[in-house]
Length: 86
Image (cartoon, rainbow, N blue to C red; front, top):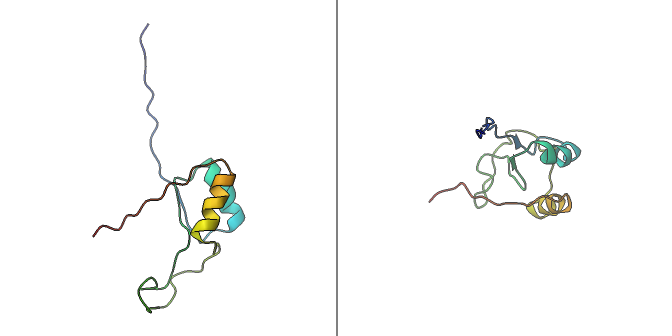
């Protein structure tokens, strides 16, 4: 008997803070591969004392700890990644 492997295409789905908390809480268990939390939408907003104009409106203002608790409470494992390379 031959063994076959079926490869499914990978589609990364990022859920941004532009979405409402209720939507994010439900979508993360269905399809999300990335989820933002504790973001600053102002240009230069994470710099020391810098604040620019906002690029878009945040609908989910929960911080990292709150998102972590929501994911853990849903039976998911939060994994942190820092994409900033020095």
